[in-house]
Length: 187
Ligand SMILES: [Zn+2]
Image 1: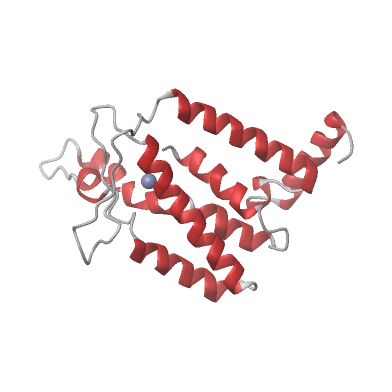
Image 2 (image 1 turned 90 degrees about the vertical axis):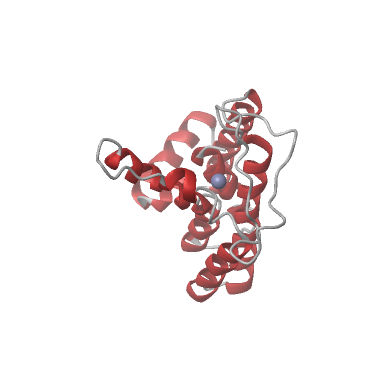
């Protein structure tokens, strides 16, 4: 699924625990995007496309970090960094796994390829996750999910007084909340 849908999913998970602070919410939200760093090889491929040493990092490495080991590693890093250690790492694990679930149900490539998820890599090639009913990346359920999540994000921002903008600038976030509440009334 696309990074925006993943991010908004992670943001919804981050909002499940009202006691989390800004930094912890960011960790939980980003945990739903981070597996796709293994797709960044696409940039290298693009850069080397016309050279004598064209790479194929995307097809070789994409989905290699969609694994339990990487999930545990990320959760462990968040455990060290977060004030509310157990709660944050638990939600980080949940958020990461929702990414895998979203890929499983709706990330069939334009060529029909299913990108099996090597959940037990690098220890075992067995148990790759795949689902026969998987729909395409650009299929309508993905659009519908993104719109619902976007609506939820706006609602939560209006209600709770913070939005994903807080990850970039608290001032911009406050301005955004003021605008929302001026338009839709006080929460
Ligand atoms: Zn993914």
